[in-house]
Amino acid sequence: MNSQQLEYFCKVVEHGSLSRAALALSINQSALSRHMRNLEEELGLSLFYRNGRGVTLTSHGKRLLERASRALEEIELAKQEAANARASGLESVVIGMTPSVGRLLVRPLALELINTHPNMKLRFVEGFSGDLIEWLERGRLDMAVMYQASGVSAVRSEKLITERLSLVSSADSPPLPKETATEQLSSIPLILPSAPYGLRRLVNLAAINQHVRLQIKIEVDSFESMLNLVKAGLGSTILPESAIDPELKRGELQTSLLIKEPVTWTIGLATPTNRPLVQGLSGIAAAIRKELKRFDMSNDSRHHV
Image 1 (tube, rainbow, N blue to C red):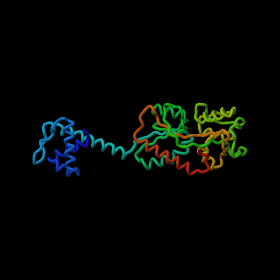
Image 2: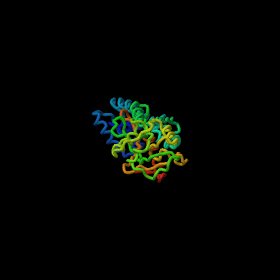
Image 3: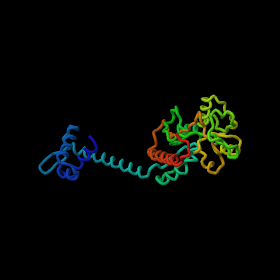
Image 4: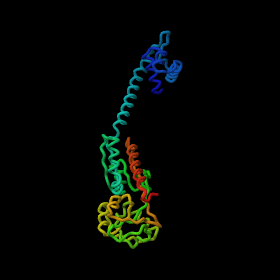
């Protein structure tokens, strides 16, 4: 028994004959008759008394009509609720981002989402990758755009873009070459986040692969503070050029692409694995992909892989 059979059954009752019901349903009378026979056979009951003037219900048919009417009303209500949900979209969404990604994405993404979901309440939360993973797991975030985590069971991650990293120094420091071998980092005072964070793990791994002992001058777990220290000439850092685009355009920083042991930064869209995805997040994810793709394509000077 399915909803179509119940709908056909109710139409036959409403019109009092198979021929008139078939006309109302715009189907062949023989097909409708076959549906009713199948329904009766499935139930093992006679639902109609058939005569030359049409059909009338048996006692079993009357009981089924009562239940079928309620079932069809509930199905119609569910369809309407789904339509309303699609029309209104998500009521709210909390999106986490690393500070470097937030600088790039928050403004264009907010404009896009306000345009497509005018009734939705947006909340953006910034944190380093380790924090974002924890907040996803605890339910504080619906999704996060962050350094792509591998081997972390708490999140599922979809790769969005991958960019090579560069050595970054103050524009007032001695000019940097176009490229810097990763092995030369041993002689450069660095300003980096502390060990738990994604950027530091990337740099540490590259250093290990090149047997380089890093010269960490300052550890700072604030992105803006890290940039301020670099601009003040207290050391260099390692970042994707996209993360410092405003400073590069203002001439405050300079970069040198890391080579020989290239360090790559993969940005992923992370969602939690310990709870179902919030309905409607697929549209938000599509907007994030769109904005990152737009950025990626419009910056030919960037070092994407």
